[in-house]
Structure formats: structure tokens, C-alpha cells
Length: 231
Image 1 (cartoon, rainbow, N blue to C red):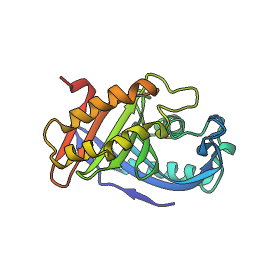
Image 2 (cartoon, one colour):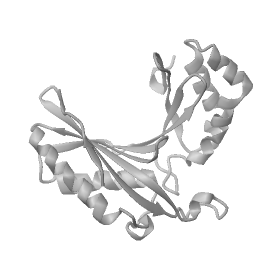
Image 3 (cartoon, helix red, strand yellow):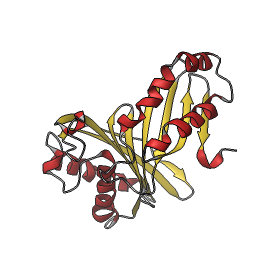
């Protein structure tokens, strides 16, 4: 078990504490179609990031109990044997948010900001501590920089997904197409909005989730499209 404790910073009279934990485990997403590769047993090096609001920085030590829970219950185990739900990252994030409230927030003056569960360096699921809304993020490398999609949904689908990450493959292919690479080479202010529009028109109708934001990060610049802020 490894963790990194980030320096707290003040937000008004509150402080935001971030702590990161890791564990290795496997799961079988048996509700998926038989031919889906993730239905079979496979493993991930999970990273769990928790952000909490506190009045006293000393309370950060309480967050260590989450690492102990992850280590005892999930590390080097089959998640299906440890939980009663379909062990997607989305549902695992919700489970950890509920565990936090019942185990930590119930006895410590601390509230949950968010829990993020990452299966890989490019995929993650986030549960908002206040609303319990779940979003997922997927990053793609392009010739211009890293493009990151964030998707949400009113409810998770029957498999426990916002959207299966595999359903985002058409966007990955679009990023690699010659016409898109030409646009990326001559990236301008409209690039992010163009890619977001393409996703909404060509991918979103066939998936459960809805695009919330698209960010493209290059070494010196960042382009951001957000659904609520779009003209």
C-alpha cells in the first residue's frame, strides 16, 4: 500500500486535504456480453484519491483508515468476492464514498469532497461527495497534446457504468484520422469546440453517458470546452 499526503490548503476557514492510496486487485464484469474481454478475470493497479474538507489538519490522520480498509478488503483479491455489486469503477467509487461517510465522517469533523477511482493512468471514475453524482474520465494522446473527456449520466446503466470505456473507441479513431491530425497540427481556439461537437454528433447518440467537458492540454496551453458554458 502506497499513499501520498498532499499539503493542505485553506479554502475560507476550511482546509482541503487530498490523500492517494493504491492497491492491486482483479474483477470479472460478468454482466457484460460473453464476447466482451472485460467479462473475463483481469486485474488493475487501482489508485484511489480522496479529497476531504476539514477544519483541523490533524484530522488528516483519520484518512489513513481508508487505506487500511482498502488493504484489508481489496488488495490482491477478486473484487467480485468482496462486494455485492457489479465491481465497476463507478460503483466502487460510490461504495467508498458511502464507506467514508459511515466510517470517517460519522466520527470526525470532516466532509467528503470527492472519491476518484482510477483503473489505469488514462481512465477514472469520480463520485462527488455532496451529490453522489458519478462521472468518468478518459484521456487520449494526440499529436497536439492530451485530450481528456469527462462524461456523466443522470443514472448509471444496468451494468453500473456511466459508459463502457470501450464505447469511446470511435472518438479515439477520429483523433487518429488524417483530417483531425491536420486540425491538431494547426490547433486554434475552435479546436476543442470542434472535437466536442463531433463527439456529441457521432458518439453520444450511441452511448449511455453525456459529454460534460473536453480538455486538451499541451505543454504551454490548455483548451477547455464545458457543456454548460458552451455558446
